[in-house]
Amino acid sequence: MNTLSLLERWQCGDAEALSMLLDRDLPWIRTYVQRNLGDGLRRAGDTDDFVQEAVLAILRYGPRFAMSSRRQFRALLAKITLNVLRCKGRELNALKRDPRNERALGTDTILYLDPPRQDVTRPDQRVEKMEEREWLRLALLLLDPQDQEPLDLHWQGLEDAEIGEQLGITANTARMRRVRATGRLTAVVLKLKRGQIDDLVAQDA
View 1 (cartoon, rainbow, N blue to C red):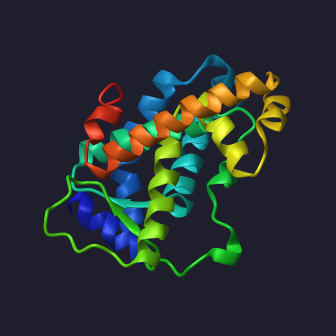
View 2 (cartoon, helix red, strand yellow):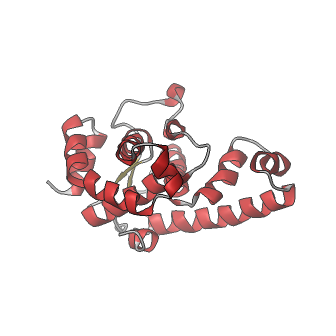
């Protein structure tokens, strides 16, 4: 069964589809992460356990996305997994939605990452806002950890001085890192919306 069908089935609550995706692509993702993880994380525990836990957290709690290319799916998931494991001080449960906002599986926005078609109907304003948040969540997971940190803290409501205290840098450095990270996040969102997945994961595929 093709990648798009499996993802859509999983988004609608089909646990068998998730098992098929994991059986099919988890070994490739493990190999990629093992090749790219630093020695510190490799020494911290069983890489296979880390990878499987991260992949499950991303698919269960991360932004819901669908795409037709198996190659791009594996590369995208591998890059996100590696970034999650590289984030110092970030727990895997940071991917989880606020349980007060949790919806039944299959009713959340699904981001289709294939190149957009011209005949796609524009969503209403409420759905569009929800979809925009999901684009940002997915793009954030594709950023390097050093860019994720100031954005995470900023979105939590911290000012630049407070972000600097958390990261051990000056307020001005924190502001510059946040501004640069915002620009990179915007660029990633635009590429995702255009279906330019290869531009984001080419070095990882």
